[in-house]
Length: 159
Length: 143
Image (cartoon, rainbow over all chains, first blue to last red; front, top):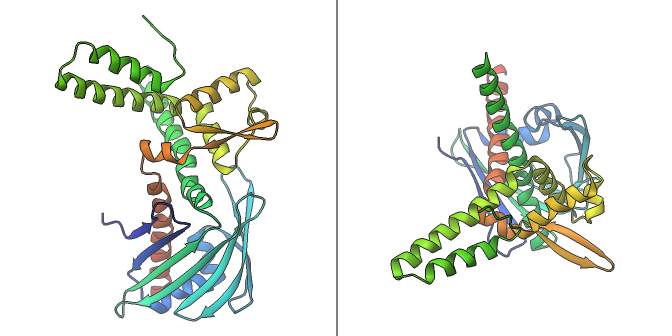
């Protein structure tokens, strides 16, 4: 399958760019970012607050598989429908500093669109740490999954 | 002979020196490859242990002292300290002295060697955006 999402993280820089092309008209893609009930569905998060306007604020809450709640929040700096969202992003109760996000929405054809997320971190180290998080958590999960499969096979062999 | 070692690098140098002594060029290159495989195996063995993986996941969030790391486990402080030692020997963790305390943090350079560590990050976003696409397609046809 073609990998639709691209991450550009240049060595030694404190920024990344995530780009993705969607089989969706521009208006529908943008709607996914502004309507709380739709956002909740695709982000798998609870929307506590979402003020889609300049100087507005947002706050989301996710519950992990262990039942722990994690909150995220930020401020919206610019909101241009079907075009731009500029906002800050912060994970509450963590040592990670706030990051700045530039989201650009673009029409490709009547049925396709493109999103580019330009994220700026406080330092190169902070950027690398954020990039590593899914990896560090992933090696745990991958090994657990592997262990599950091995265990299941052992049990079925014993039967 | 079974030799327990904490150091990945020493092992490589020992192996290289051993073969270098009786070497011609080809054997030397072969030994380099063997040494590299050995190093990779060591790192993978280091992360094969569930406690060590849990330590990696912990320090990925923030640099921690050995005491703070040990508080997250039921095992003895000594056991955890041994795990930290192995992770440090394989350079997955690095030490940093801050005042009287030693802090351990994840070494991004090493992670880059064992895997493309950006890939899980990209994957996370890819899955999220796939979800967005399918939910919005359903939303569109419901309208």
